[in-house]
Length: 619
Image (cartoon, rainbow, N blue to C red; front, side, top):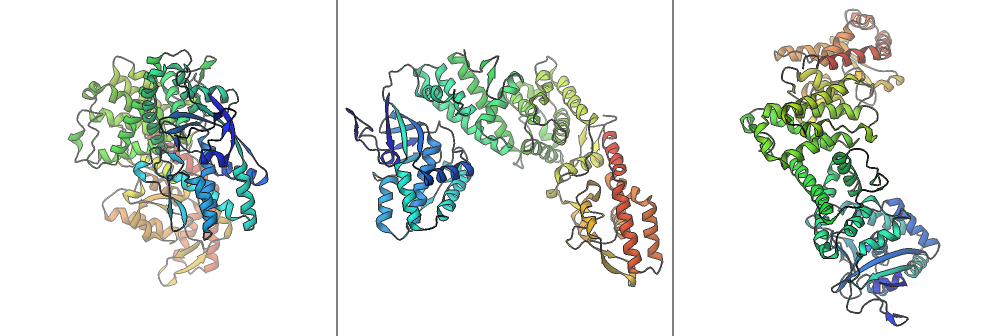
């Protein structure tokens, strides 16, 4: 192991100046490389800005960087976040000297001292290129292994914005000097007969100081558990693992650390702590080579099959044939469309993560035990997914979403039983019922949650344990602001033949606009036709719309309309249509009606909540 302190300028020049009797960097090695098995760039804006400001105030010691000698280059084992940020700073400084050829040449001797960019990153490919006298990011999607393009673009923009705020060119020159004078401790693993992997070195240095993330510590233990003979194979496994973990960002996962933690929670119960300690020691302590490898391979399989499943949900030809035996028989029905909607909703919801684990485990288990596919019918699979979807939606609408005690292992336990399919259906239904019993309809709900509640009330078939249709914008379903219109002026168009006119609602009614009881889910065309008409005209238009099409008014719409029509304030308002009432009188009565309706909101919510719960009474 070689150790020495250099300035940033010397680091990027790969300065071979001797320290005592030994050269710093080997003259044959002219690149710093972030290998595929290293983690992605994760620095947020705040950390980048802090580093720039610290450098601006004083010459900063940047900590350590650990390198591994490999062929004609050095692999960066630890320190890639800081070094990458410094490299992006150099690129932005280069751009700040636009038109100053000599200054740019001076910086280019650091950025690209030997004909190619000195800091290379195999997780994104060639990420910097020169164009029209400026350095730009040029990350190609197909080479962006861990989906970092957006993070690099954000970081580059953050650095550029900070530098552009420097008051004058003298300030840029001073900052450049301080940056290049920053010092860093370099540790190089140049003797590969050592029994301890270089990955273990940065684990030893940083773990006690708690400088590493869960992912880094986990990786260090993986290499510690395996003999050096297996390290190359282990690195290949780690790359596959990282690709899966980064793919789960589509599901709202933060990073590979969260992927590891949630996988182990689902696999081994909630005794695993967030730092992966279990019974007072790290989860991987005491694990042998084969067991360590098996855990990694399990994580890879789990990730791959679930990512493949998610991709299939966007395939119009996909009919769940890999998960149930007769899905193709239902190819001409809308079943597969609704199933895909449910599964997408479960995977894409980012407000919580624990509720996804039953579905992720189910998909992984079926794909690992393919013989079970022949025993699950499409109808049975449909029931399971429907119940898991209802469970998931109610989970994210309830409390304790972030407590690991809320993780449910009912599905996992059912799959461990002998009568798997029967127990699986019972388990999914039990999960659903637990959440239904504690359901409370909130007065302020987002679009997705409201669509879910109204879909259940209107479309749930208790005999089949199936939601026939799920309201969604892509299906032509829209949110109708039924009482308080969705226009800035809060105007109401009073429809009464030749006596029609518009008036403005009082300003204080806008606080009711986002209330649950102000919304209906209606077809887009009907929504557009209603506009900001008065409530009497809207109610009649809704009834006529469904009557003309020989359809029943949806249950949730009927709840709202029936409640309104029984209100004395509404009856009084409606009577004005038959009178020669003044604009002021109508406006006053309208205001009284609105306040009476929303002041009794709990009554409306209670009725709607009861309708929702009643949907499951018989199935």
